[in-house]
Image 1 (spheres, helix red, strand yellow):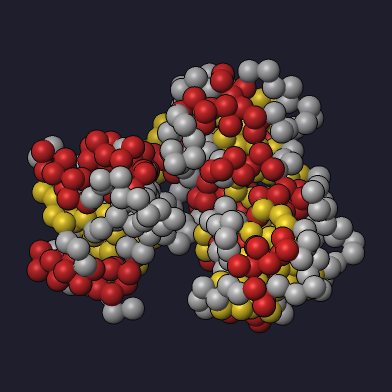
Image 2 (cartoon, helix red, strand yellow):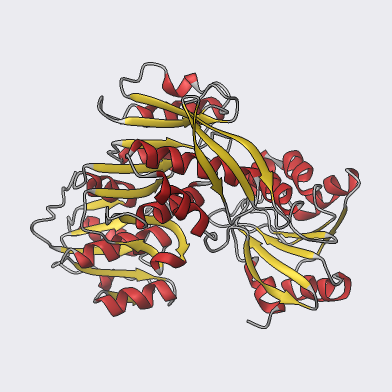
Amino acid sequence: MYQLDFKKPTSIHFIGIGGISMSGLAQILLKEGFQVSGSDSHESPLTTELKHLGATIYYGQRRQNITDNISVVVYTAAVKKDNPELDEAIKRNIPILTRAELLGQFMHNYKNAINIAGTHGKTTTTSMVAEILLQTDLDPTISVGGILPSIGGNIRVGASDVFVTEACEYTNSFLSFFPTIEVILNIDADHLDFFKDLDEIYDSFHMFGKKLPEYGTLIINSDITNSHKVTDGLDCNIVTFGFKGDETYVASNITYDDMGYPSYTLSKNGTIIGTIKLQVPGAHNVSNSLAAAALALELNIDFFFIQKGLSDFNGTNRRFQKKGEIGGVTIIDDYAHHPSEIKATLTAAKNYPHKNIICVFQPHTYTRTKAFLNEFATSLALADMVVLADIYPARETDTLGMSSQLLQEKIQNLGTKAYYFPTFDEIENFLLENCINGDLLITMGAGDIVKIGESLLGE
């Protein structure tokens, strides 16, 4: 495998440079003195920023974008084998790396390479960790899978030996990483277009745990069913967090204010550390913040900075993000696209001021919809009304016989009002006619459903 030498910057080309993770890696390399080029399908704020930083950006992926002066080509799992740029790089014998392999090589440069993993909550927890670290003088490098206002984007390049990034299990990409500290938030069945079943997902997380050196630390949620499947046989230090009371780090005395924002008491090994107050709603964010606090305490960060960082955290883009209000209706956008995430978001919404909770949901991929059709219906039925858009296919072409109408029927059978419309215009018209003053409207999904709320707000 091609190895980058960060002391000898060369020329690197990214296929799909506008992606949230790829753009972040490109930014780090630009600031390390590398020559960076890349292609994407269209212009975006991320590609504009890269161009401003000195990258050469191509719109459209073509063979002529690959030139002999390129030292290595980086691509993502979404890039097909017949991609013209990838094919041209192979024909020219230019070394190629996956995004995960490149990210793994980054980690060799840091004493503390911190990986935040789990089926859900990676972006939020990584952002919480970032807020805590930014209170200190540690000067971290941060790569997050969303836009974090406090760092002005998805990447921050620091000058210390601390590197924090999300670690995704999809296609086993995190097995290319070299962490010294891991956080595992949760494990659910997901990405079943790649994994055979839940057992295979556990095996993947176990192999991820084995990536840690003996001096490394695994911080794991004790609420993970059969968590021993991950921890058995590991040589590293194992730290737990949760709500039962017998974990290393425990959240207790959880209360919620009028906005649904939680506060709780944090303890370590039975000794009270202090009180945490959050500015994001939901029990799932208590768990996310507990993981972030546990990590910070393992890094010997003063509790004052932990309190301050978590109280300053107001969320990231597309994670229960308030988009605005129109006609007394509050519009929230959320990235939830798995039944567990939907349940967490809608449960949190019940503590948020509202008359009715109206969820506009866009299912993400036919594979996921088929695998969790009943679970989707059960989670969405927590809303007072559900409006469904067509399934967002992402990388898939086979519908597998799935449709939003099938999901609509399942939700209606559970006693919740559910509607389906094939176009965003029809959804917007329906919402304008049916939302009333005091309602909470949540656009939800990993596709482009956010456009509906933005359109209603005139953005």
